[in-house]
Amino acid sequence: MPSFDSICVREVPDPRTTKPHILPLYLTSSYAFDSIDDQIQVFNKEKSGHTYSRYGNPTVEAVASKITQLECFDLDHEGHGIMFSSGMAALHTLLLSTLKSGDAVLTQGNLYGGSTELLQKIGPRCGIKPILTDLSDLGNVEDVLRKNPSIQLLYFETPTNPTLQCIDMEAICLLAKKHGCLTAVDNTFATPYLQRPFKFGVDLIMHSTTKYLNGHGNSTTGILVGRDKEFMQTQVWGTMKLIGTNPGPMDAWLVHQGMKTLTLRMDRHCQNAQAIAEFLDDHPKVSFVNYIGLPKHPYHAIAKKQMEGFGGMLSFEVKGGLEPALDFLRKLRFCTMAPTLGDVDTLVLHPVTSSHLNVAPEIREQNGITDGMIRLSVGIEGVEDIIGDLRQALA
Ligand SMILES: *Cc1c(COP(=O)(O)O)cnc(C)c1O
Image (cartoon, rainbow, N blue to C red; front, top):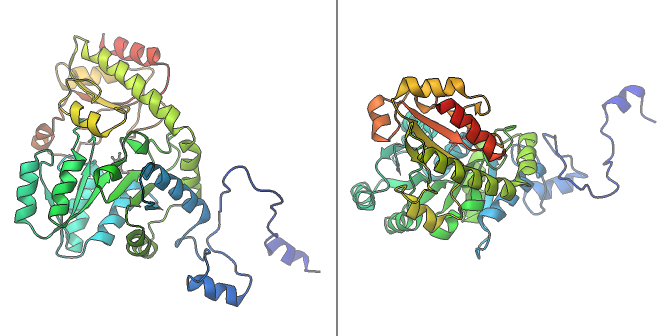
């Protein structure tokens, strides 16, 4: 019989009697072995099993495999996904596992702000050179690829934030292949429900799962899904376990909970955003609306070709610039002002005073981000409540 103190300290035997209905949360940093022989086999990969949670955790891996299944849905290959502590951790791990000092990465100027900063500030410290260009001009892309043989990775977003520029994935991937360059896309805005980039030849897909995949704004995580299983299991996993960009199991578990309603949420996000875009487009105090579901949006045709729906993100300009835009924001009562996106509630952001505060005015202008621009992450509430709030704040 162990002592009182030992009973306090010792683990209890596995309490399961029947299979849990819901994915269990494995809050453990390591895994105990039944014997030394067992341990040797697991460490030598002769037997599957977990060792240490930075290397892999059952909860985290279950969520990664679900997102991988969605990204590979309807395709004849399996792929492999690895989750990270954030979207930025996913991007950082992507760069360190695909590039080496002396390589260049080709990308666009209007990426998610943090991604641009990572490429421009951290990339050069590792000897990785970012080359920013207009990726919607394919002739220009071909020219840049031809002139810069050090480009090993093409990294882009479609649709982009906050102007919803779309990139023709099929065309740009053909160009990249021709020049022996890997392709990676940030699929955060679309989710695999609305856009599955593997179909168009993309090699690696990144998500900030903090956004639509979680959907409820209660955890920060990211994922990389690769077409090449072997590459993911060696290069990407090998980098992740050494730089420690793995997520906490609780954060991954919350993404799993959120994803159960992904299709219901996305259908409603799309439906509400379309109605709101049409309302704003007709409003006399609004000078323009960026929503790819509006046939007149310059990227509507590309979006239609490669997406199954137009998503919940839109931006618009309040006529008159900064002051009328701030006035509009001060009057909002129903929508929430928060610098994130993809949650169930409608979120409003003023890029110039938040996400794009540190972006030079001329770069903002080049990318169509005006002082009066408002970004909406349209939620799944009753659309009449959202439109009512916008109407009274514009009045
Ligand atoms: C939020 C976001 C990121 C960064 O993800 P985190 O989870 O915040 O690290 C990257 N790309 C896009 C498009 C995003 O919206």
